[in-house]
Length: 489
Image (cartoon, rainbow, N blue to C red; front, side, top):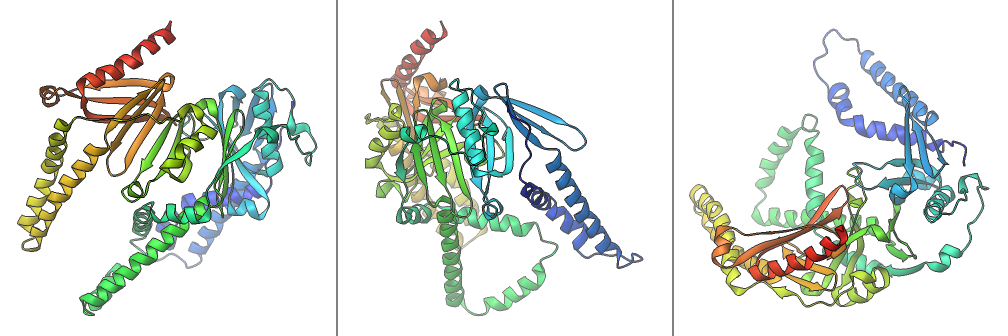
């Protein structure tokens, strides 16, 4: 048993920052943006701002004061709420993962943030925004031990007590991403697109503040500089964005380490914001291997863990990155050290050659209306869109070439490509459902579509291969059904 405890007082500051982030855009739109204010004294606006700031501080303090956590009777208990008291009891056997992270504020005060997640939650079930690192480690260790019928409680122990080395002796570091590898990973990740789109989305929130008319007028004068100068400046701007996106990825995944214990996988990463995620091995549902257009020719891939945990508030926790960048030829050995049940060297069965025409036809039918519109409305430059036709055919061929399936023992492997190649490896006992369907056009060529889904976060991860040999689909279905029938008895 443990007495209820409060968070570190720094949680007040974190509550204020969180409230400010949530209110910044409405605050700018309502208070800061100048508008018509005839008859309103000039001191009103500063007074409104001061009242809002004061209310934020009072609310943050009361939220900290009324928030307590404790461990009692095999449960992690949280009581919170200023006006309405909320009590949440989380049984240890319902906990799927514990995430320990260090934001910039926490690192300044040598604190951490601890998230406790259960299966299928839309958000983290328990968030301790500011506690000492030793406290977080004791909570993590105690919950793991309690789930193994250990009844000791670390919250009642001396704050500076160091746990025994029993767990440390059973753990080993099995993967470390080096700095050069991180730069390669970041440079080939395609993060520049996310970086640009995020910047556009952010700027669009301030369209009433930013003087776009003045900017565009200056842009008209800027165009007069000439095509060559504009091209050079555009390339320089793109290069700057690319470098910034690459550096942001390196900072995010710096010091990436995977540690394996008897029952858990512990993943640590981050330079400015350090994060540690603990995943019970028995909650892992499958392995997903991603190879984009740049990495695949280089024999490189990114590997994710699909597991029954995570929350919608934290998109990263839905699919956990196990290896940010790894050579495909080393993947077998690394999986053997972490998740040996998923290591496989199975031969993939490709889809039949008669399916190629269907892949090409689908892409051509998609692209022809686009080409027609560009040619009609954009003549003469619109004729350049005809180059999209061979690109569509090449794209179709790449999708056809990378599609396939494989079975080895209790493992099913499905591979497909949209832009990046995805390979999903699943255990038979973890598969939620297998769907086998065929259209009238597929039936004419004795083809079908096979898909399999596994639990991933709050939803499912689906592997699907289109235009598989029909008899192969029946083989996959028969491989899956007998085992499920036995398990249900």
